[in-house]
Length: 399
Image 1 (cartoon, rainbow, N blue to C red):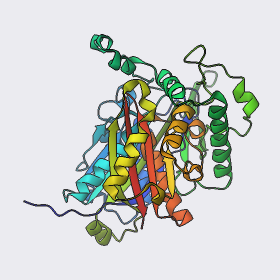
Image 2: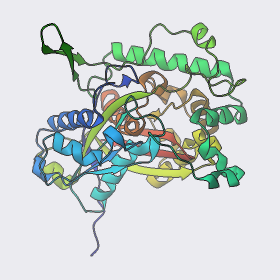
Image 3: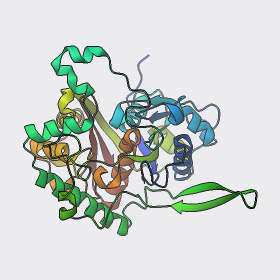
Image 4: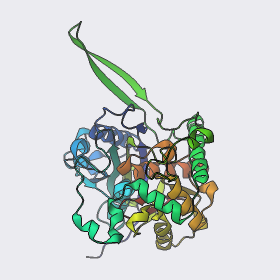
């Protein structure tokens, strides 16, 4: 049986505010609950959808264990109140997990296997640490020099990139400052309003004198990472944290974060059936490998591959969400490819907005599809480096 190739459309794209880990507002919110809330908001944003018609849920998570283990995709689907008939699959490609989930959902629609799929990502770095609760490297990593980079901390790979591509400390700090300035300005201008759902935080505490549990509620409607008070002087005072004589600091690196995002993807048949208005068309996706010890340069290989698949040129991209794992690798990618800096992260990036690992790709996908519509632009891209030496890139088109 030959299936007809068809287009896949994003019909809703919603994210939670991103909290700082491990002491931010979302530190006590279970990731399965956070994802369930995002799913409910994404469904509400596309009111024509019949929940019974949703054929699967594909969710990215970089550390799928503990509170975000046990197939968090399926659990969140049930906690969100979707029918038992909706499945759930958790996928992991580290930092690109959320983008991979969107691409996998699009693929199933494009080959005609499905008409309506939920995609997204979730990560609580407050509850599940980088590397998980029990990281265990195979001793074989230490038998070959070219594999040693797998065991490096991400910061050391950024130092390698900074050295090889000659990215100065001053350039990294200036890039970090611009990320915060853009993010603060974007929040003040309401740039994230279409994509960001308000999230109610419920906190409980024991009142021993009264012998009762006190419940307080507050609404979070803003990312916690952007800082209006940072400056080049403040960033310059920070010491390197990964190499004694290095240039990568906490200030020019992405923030550890908590967050979730959910997107509904539909075929053209589903658009007609449920009277849905598409936000964007999913165009292409690519993953490429690079040496593990310079993993941050991954987008340099993935971006041209995604463009080739789409039949597009780099200059066709109107908006590029380049995940700022580190300023060093972001600048190396930008300079190596000659990316137009005015099109890269116009609203700030992970240095200011945060990087909830497996959720980030889906979060930035929500950002780009809404930005394309808001600015009346045509093509946008989400791209990132990936641990163990990979890069990923996905392209979206406003419709």
